[in-house]
Length: 289
Image (cartoon, rainbow, N blue to C red; front, side, top):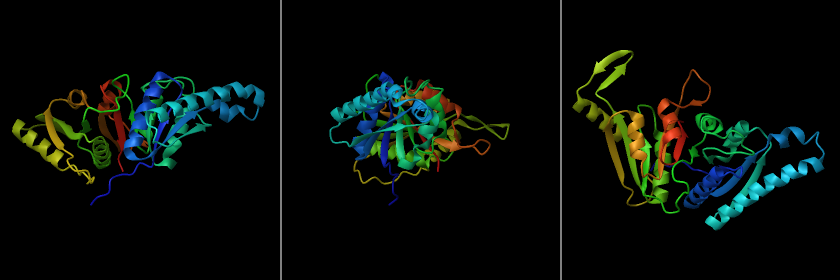
């Protein structure tokens, strides 16, 4: 039996904004399902660069504000899921370096779509987008409904492209199993494709068969959870619009991020960018191995 990936710790970036508190709610629910601990993190450049030159009395208000943010978020998480172990950490770095440096926890990192305070400019297209594009671990950006529901809708969607999605598939299976939800694999196809700059026209039936074969070849690990239903949906149309339709009413949309050799680290394609900006539900970006 193939072993599914292990998330040792669920992390949530908090700054006191409503969006970051939604991320806390999502993260503690996920930690509960996984039987994992939750760690709430906050980054402060002030703490890194000024603690050696500024008197402790001057730093006191800043530190107290950070402590209040972390303590309030921890109380919120514990009230929502009393059985989850919750701890907090102040990261004395700039926000991007701090979040990208969390790999030591083998984590799942949960972000809101925007924020303030310790995460200045945490707008989609800024910090959260750069973290999702470069992190060496799964990242969830909490989009969609204003408040995460403790009881989900019963469906996790995995976007399947032509690149390797095995790591994303493992993550999607974990999420679906933990939620007792259905797993839907979605691949969009069009009769006309392009190969090495040469337009090649395929019969629609042949293109649909190719799409179904691609979906059937996605490796799905065993979970030990009985009754996990898997649906494979080959949809004619553009990838972004097809995934947006599939994500409507879903608990989570899972996408794989592939490594591009011409750039350092991971990079996001146009479809992932579109989902992070417009998806009607939380989006998970899972790096390829």
